[in-house]
Image (cartoon, rainbow, N blue to C red; front, side):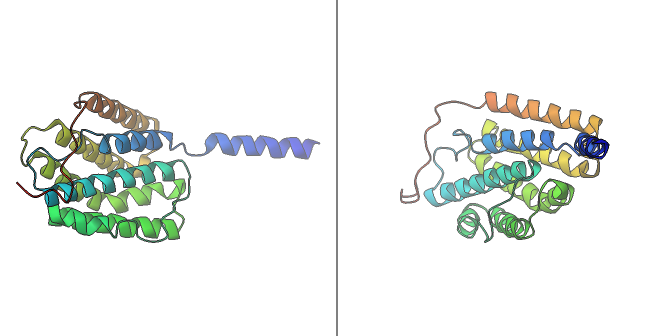
Length: 212
């Protein structure tokens, strides 16, 4: 009986001391919802092909952020094949650098799935993804702002980039209390950015719509 009790005590101690990646998970989930917000669409007047490419970049960013949240929750990623083989060439029609970034993220998601990256791999994963994530954020926010300077949609995407940069900067200390507080604060700022986005935004032109 004493051995059983000792084993239970050790298991509880291990559980209590396990790293908590919940703040990263929560930030990533909010960021994914912001990236996929109905207001994050190309401005009116954007040529149909460019608009479709912008939407492809948006979808890729939202998908990656959802995957990051899943990793932080110790979940298994399902991308045994590159999930962005169709999105990357579409994204390139709006921005060449954006298409390259989408392709890079897709390849890394495939690698993460095949190597079963989960919560313990989060520090390495964030650092690995960040260069392509920042390139995608730059391309997507630029595309959103090209015909609409000062666009709140572009500001929301840039806010996501800032949050991911924070995760990268603090990847080695990501579960420490002071870093957790910074991540929570960034999540709060992102939520407030989302609340400021307009509602009832019209859908962009489809790929079959003639360019103006």
